[in-house]
Amino acid sequence: MGVPERLTVALRTQDDVVVLRQRVREQAVALCFSLLDQTKIVTAASELGRNAVAYAGGGEAMIEPSLNSGRVGLALTVTDHGPGIPNVEDAMRPGFTTGGGLGLGLSGTRRLVHEFDLRSEVGRGTIVRILRWK
Amino acid sequence: MDRVPIIKVGKYLLATIQTDVQDHVAVALQEDLAARIIAARARLVLLDISALQIVDSFIGRMIADISGIARLLDAEVIVVGMQPAVAITLVELGLTLSGVRTALNVERALAMAGIRDQA
Image (cartoon, rainbow over the protein chains, first blue to last red):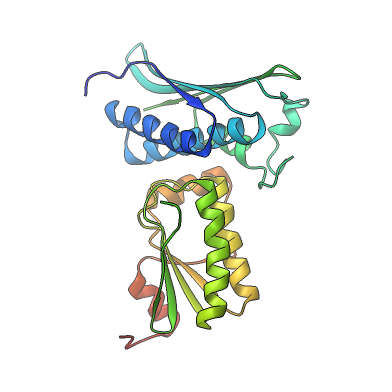
């Protein structure tokens, strides 16, 4: 496998979240991420993928390698057109949940990656971009 | 895979999560295990997750819930074989699974539970 290219995964069902995890894993392996780094970025991808499917009626994930001045990383952007997040600050707080979960999804995801950027507009949707350097 | 296989070995139940599981499979496992604990009058459940490459917050909560459900049914769950990278990632995610017993492998789990000479 050569240098991975940008690829997208449609997120509609739980099956798609499984596919997303597999694709992110493959890309992380292709970029020679350590097993621990693979595990962290795949876990983060799983959190974001599930959010899109469970709370926003689906969305799309874009996986892209990031090669920046000698550094190698893997970026993931998850976009949905769901209800949006009214209060992003609340949503980022550990323990905050509107569903049945533990509320660790977003705050935990942020701890697993080096860069985390969340933009959300009520009624329009949410875009989360994460990046983990090797 | 739609169901996690649960087998009865002597006095205990062994549930082995084989691969990457979908959320609904994990939820079904909770119900299946609760039913099997009663049917088999099992006091011990070994939940083997050694094949799991990741445990995210949903699967982590499922593991904690299974442990809690079993306890209410007078049984104990020991989670077996968590991968080191999974453990590190779980803690970083904020999930320590503090109420859940764990063992490095099945042998140690059985020793922990005081079960020997099981055919």
